[in-house]
Amino acid sequence: MAAAGSPGSDGGSPAAAGGNRQLKYISLAVLVVQNASLILSIRYVRTLPGDRFFATSAVVMAEILKGVTCLLLIFMQKKGNLKQFASFLYDSIVVQYMDTLKLAVPSLIYTLQNNLQYVAISNLPAATFQVTYQLKILTTAVFSVLMLRKSLSRLQWLSLMLLFAGVAIVQVEQQQAGGKSAPGSLATQQSYLVGLVAVVVSCLSSGFAGVYFEKILKGSAASVWLRNVQLGIFGTLLGLLGMWSAEGAAVAEHGFFFGYTPLVWGVILNQAFGGLLVAVVVKYADNILKGFATSFSIVVSTVASIYLFDFHLNLLFALGAGLVIGAVYLYSLPKGSPSAGVATQQPGHTAQNKELPSVTTDGFLSKSVLVN
Image 1: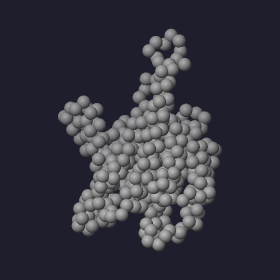
Image 2: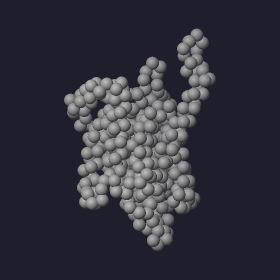
Image 3: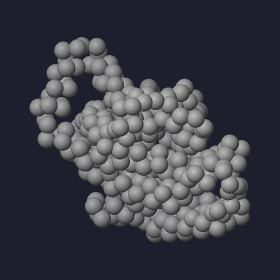
Image 4: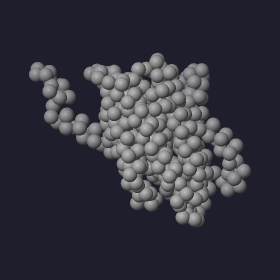
């Protein structure tokens, strides 16, 4: 409750508490929808019959849209003053070019990761991908210990072991279920091994890039929007280079927007704006809520896969997924102190820079918040 005799401090009033609770529920809903919808929508558009769009072009398009959006947000921060806006970008990107070049490494990794996600989701059931992709929590934790000398609680180490066990059980179940697809079905045109390798490499890249990005953020006063612009510059250039090296001849023949439909545009918009939306919303969600949202999104993806993709849920998969869900939630629990990976907003302080490290490296939203 608010202390008596402190006028103007309504943070502890019932109305304020109710408002904060409502914001947390909204945050939970946004996080669940964004986490689940992106994977389900990519899986859906990549398995539709007909012309298949180029995944590499979709990655480039998402980077462009994200960069343009961040530029508009910076322009609004400069109150529409074009001279200040241009001067700020020139100084931040060109004059301080060494600072900009630091973003080349994570941008390269994120571009690779975004392309690998399309490969993985095109070859794995959405529920299997969602469960296996939680290995990014393990890789982020390991890289944090190795590169940042961070310490993990016993509960977090236990949760990581449960996470690995759960993913392993799911993989065993999927291997046992392999080869049961009807001849001529879509599943027979997919490679489980290719999808598995893609998602594992994506998790490794996510962990490394998230921790590397935290090292860049520490000691830097640059806003998240400026960092996204810098990432977008390299991401677009590297994405175009990857597109022309992998599918250049096909893109030249059919065009950049070949196979684009309203559904494909929906996926691209989700990639471009979804993470930025979460970056705004996540300030109202603590670490436990983010862990719960990630766990709940696995359930949503699994249930939706049963109805959308004829996914067959059995006891072994349920056991593995249950271990992963429990591990994600346990890992999100605080270690007993406010500094245990949860950015706490102090009165009179803006949480923008304080919360960035936890947002980028807690293992739940590292890529979706700042990049995708």
